[in-house]
Image (cartoon, rainbow, N blue to C red; front, side, top):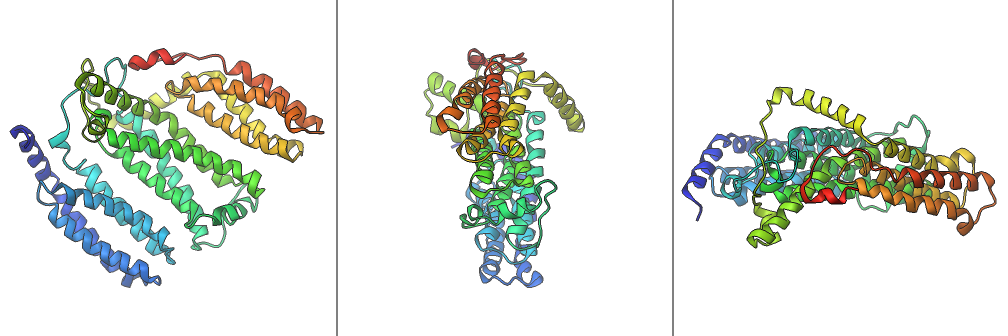
Length: 445
């Protein structure tokens, strides 16, 4: 079925990582011992951990054979379920939540990050790790480390809020808005979700971490499904976070400091992911046009691209220093006008509270200001740079809003008009473009 050299490479790789499946057998035993050790009170959680523990042991035993890929993938999906189960069954004990999160995260990490994608040696085609026409590798570790770090940071913030919603702690901290965070987390908007929305955010961040770590430095072409799902997880999460910010003053009537922090983290993650998704999209288009391979086949099994380059491997010991150095350099090279666009957006959001006006014009400002900040952050990525032009529309709306929506507050009117007049010219400068991205370069204007 597969070439002999691919089978040999797959078997050798599986032999090297077979210890992973002995480790997951131990995790299964840990799960089974959890309910009596920590005194679970929710029967569904008791049975969930016992059944999941036996399944983890069985799948791990079967996964010791190199060609039982379905068992190896079963461990991955079972680990993901363990991250969801405490939310679905509303675990009453914090120990139950932490136990399932700990085991679930370890199971997925061992099965797909440490052992790598099951079957990758059988299906991954040979090829470059720098796409044709690109000046850098979008899947390099120094591109992904910031996302993983931010996702962990977001996880801790969201888990803290989720612990309050699920009753593990009685109070929640807010340094700026007093009772704002508590009132937002206990509002009708939050209660409209069947599960804790904050804990759902924590789950999303953990998945971001796992997908950020999965695959090597050529995953943009060997694991397109990972890259595409990674992009889908991060971009919609950022948009949802902005939506929740909009809902705070409009529907709830309060601000939440921790929610704002979580939303900012989600937004900052977006620019780091766009280029890798773009490289994968270019690969899928190339495979379709040049080789006639369907998008569906390339999505799951990857492909190659002529004209790319092999990036020099960097020693892991210097990865963190390199990431910090390049991150600081990139921050200094971001266009100055984008920072000003963000500042104007923040002012538009906060103007109703500062200037003391309410009504439809205030709701409009909350919405437009939040969206303006979102697109300014996304435009920090050279791939997303064309999105800065949307601020021209936001500026025009701000100028017209006092007359369309109506207001008798002079402060609101002049704040909107001046903010709109500032936004429009700030949206025009493109800033310096440092890197090349093949055929997409013509769109970065």
